[in-house]
Length: 353
Image (cartoon, rainbow, N blue to C red; front, top):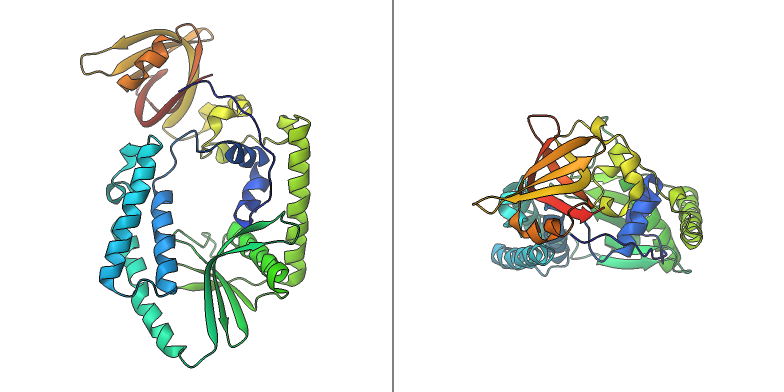
């Protein structure tokens, strides 16, 4: 709720999972690196994804072997993620079971992997195999690094895989480019650490369906070179305070960015062009009213017009009352039935502009 002040930190390294994000908007990645936590609520599905990934890792390594084990671990991890949401001020997203679409189906899909894993163990008993999960891989110069989901070594044959709980394919039927790039960079890191490229790269969904990613060592090396070049350029621009060169404001990029409150370039976009019913607005606070139910209405002055935001949580009363005459930005408000009328929702956040 306070005014956002940004002290940008240089990037220590680039992770394979961030490479595509850097190409879309380097400034977004820099802001993410500079803040301890997001400035806006992010989808609760991300927290369920943490639970899913950890359960998959424990199933693959044999630490979850029964349905009872799974239920115990799942509930423990779920409680941990929900506490984290509460600590971040996003308790309204709990329980996750009621706030993540497809929760029950995703849980059963992960649980079904126990049976699949038991079958694989039986098949591989007489083979020379090893499995590494959540393995940290880092380039020799430490400029590229990240955790790969799983590395399987079977009779000298190496397969590197990544689990995804969401959609893997585009509408055209092709694997999302960002997933392919991520795996190719992990392949490069595997070569850096072990002195050889894996024999196979694949992406695995919750139905245990596997999608192979074709690659060559040459293209993996090229991606690594581009990653290092991007890292050096970004840190140079931070040092020279040339932030405009880092930012790439675009409606499609910005609408899901959780660091919009720290980006002045975002407000240069024609925000009314989005087809979403949710908006970000700002204006000078002219008046604040509180009703018997505790909710607030705020009247904002913007240029020659006037904006009204209703249903604001009472926790914002001291904040808004102390900023009469000053500019405040409202993020994630719902467009009302009349022009210049907005309604706060549970994900609405306020910052001094």
